[in-house]
Length: 240
Image (cartoon, rainbow, N blue to C red; front, side):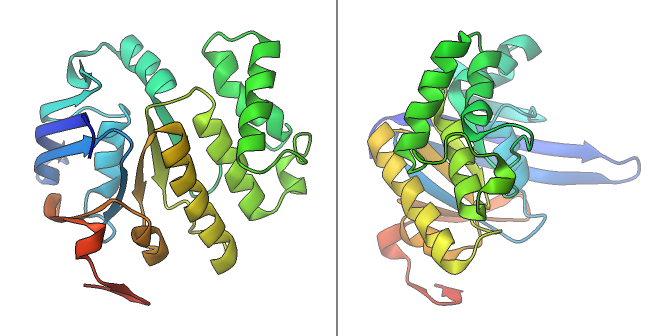
């Protein structure tokens, strides 16, 4: 692996629910590398989403530190965290989260406009990235004119638009059929290589594990194990 991009040290996240304290994350220590494809697995409620929110600067830990590209997120003000999210993180969601009234170019250009790009610059960059994900002939199509796989490609293009260091993909194949899901998996793998972006995905899709560099299992808010892909035996329906 190359240089460490993300350092997570002693991270705990607790939610005080009155008489009960929920320990969402328990002493997480983890290094994630630049250009790595990391898949995160675990049952519902295991802490996957909480860990995603920490890395994506959407939430703060109760204790511990998260450092990305030399920037300690836990020390940033809300305004600086928002700037960090806009410039370092790209998000890909299970439900695509596209704006239904706008075409593909406008959906992809939106984060660029929010970051201060001129409309012509944002549109040019949006077209460039849409072409890279195979949608050069769908630039002016709205989400209701696109298939599920095409909508997810628009979402991936949007995540790449600001040239982020990290893409966080939350179950990106969950709403797709088998063939389309495989296309999206290999697209993410290719873009990870071509753009040098670090891809971190929460998934139950074993096909996605097959293209990963490492696989992280989380159970009850703690790291159960972390393994290189070549050390994991994957067959249909099972992971060993």
